[in-house]
Image (cartoon, rainbow, N blue to C red; front, side, top):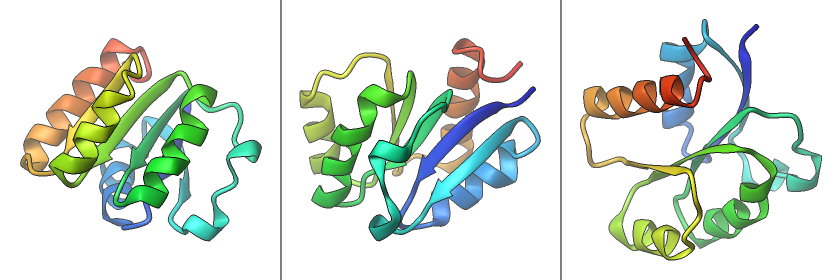
Length: 119
């Protein structure tokens, strides 16, 4: 049975990439609109991919982090990366979007296998 994964991606590009490469291995629910994000209703997910584009997304990350065990955070710039690192959240995988698609997929794949989310 595939693991259930929540994706928060208001820019929509990263969620498309994940669905393209992992839809046969993971079941995705995607939120691409900040107005539809309701953290209190998010339960039962094995992992989360969360793209932080701005400070509103950063605040939403803090609302959701403690609800899901395995967390991957996509960051488009160093300022946001620094803010996330200062939170000192454990077991978070930070995905830097300045890396190539091949490098990102390598990191994601390794992390998913390590956390037993895929075989």
